[in-house]
Picture 1: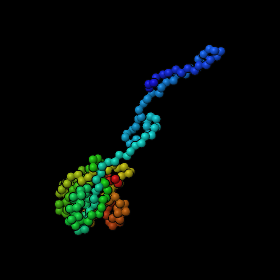
Picture 2: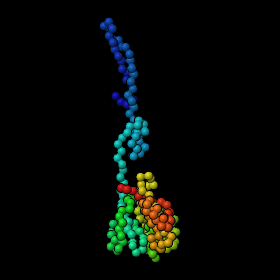
Picture 3: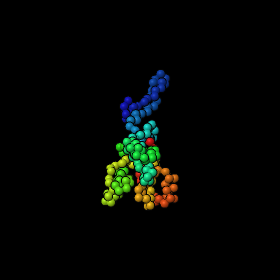
Length: 198
């Protein structure tokens, strides 16, 4: 039988030695249709509610290291192990992994350096990049990528210290650290980018 074929099924009975058709039923083979899913992460068929197993897609990420300069008060962020180790050898305090950044997807986060103070700045705004370059900051390229702004990802908060000359911005995923700095006079400037746990 093929999809959409139609068959007649007859029921027979013998009465007084004579075989007769008692009833006839027409049966149509259901049309075979592939399951329909919205995308690769959709588990439930949109046609028949069949539920399939969907394995989560694991994106490739890089850990982002956080370092602190006890002489200037600046925090520095990098995905480079070589850069982390070089700064540690110069006296920076390594503070661990702050978040993970996607390698091949997401929006770029740009890095700039103030040649007069050595301070670094990170932003997703190309306008801010150009504004700071106009003030003499050196553009150092894309530092990492921001993860998507979705619930399961981790927001990174941006704060500004109006009293500092170096380390004037700080970035953290810790609400407690953010609130403590605000209590000390730092200005909370909102979300900077997103990271992931994986």
